[in-house]
Image (cartoon, rainbow, N blue to C red; front, side):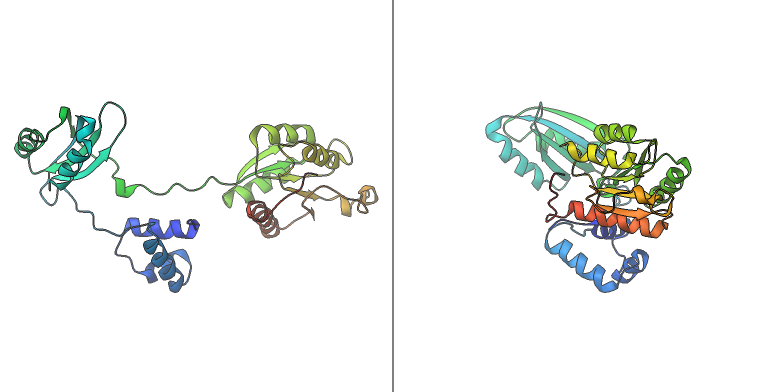
Length: 288
């Protein structure tokens, strides 16, 4: 079982302040304290996170930071790595590929301590062919400040010849975390779908021709690369003088139909429902 958006929010809250209580985190995230407590217990138990104290190096007297890159004979790499890890000045020891077998990050009270470390402790280790030392002048971003990247936002393609509908819908979707593409007719919409691969299509019926949206859905479903993309048809045709032209008595290859005007909340719910269904492991969409 992986982690979801709520788990990521809990981790971010603890990264900002590891002493925050479950109650404080729950209040900020708008969930119950018991939810945060159970989530955090699972994250710790499953090894997703470790809660530790990270000292301020300068404040505790370590004003010199350095990285030591080591070329080591293969037969000695593991031995050297373990010996380096045992030195109290060493913060990290990392195996790497390329020119250097090991990279060490270490901290010192002053340059004299660094010199002693290199000339006495490192120099005494067998199997080291070469070392390169790099002073760390300033740390712009520390490892504990890194945050788990958010998953990419879902992309929705709006195919409609009404620029006002496109713009209003774009504002609603973007405010709720979606990336929005648009096209003014079916041909342009199919081109965008095939080249930019959105996660869902909102499609009008009446555009250049009365039932252009229907022919567009048939084109989408006939293409192996696009046939599984959810299509939400949003149109005013059912309340227009052309209502009788819409083939309600036969199969229309869309995932759902919504009549215009549609409330933003209802539109968002339906989009999320279709995306959830598409991403569900049980969802198996047959070619249409």
